Image (tube, rainbow, N blue to C red; front, side, top):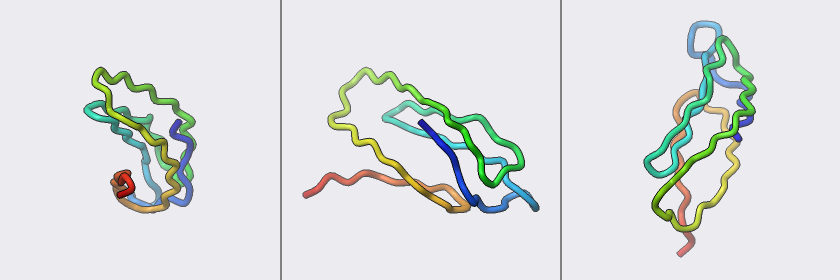
Length: 78
């Protein structure tokens, strides 16, 4: 579930038009755009159907207040 964003940066003079893109393997899904909002609430569930086994999938909760793209990767412990 993509829940919400808080205190997002202003990108369009006075506000932003935020959305979230989630990727898993070669699949991706995008939330709706919420116009003119710095504290958007999506509460959108995303379901992915993947044919090939991906191994262990870890679920991550990210709390990010950045003005730009935030790529992240999950690193397996050595």
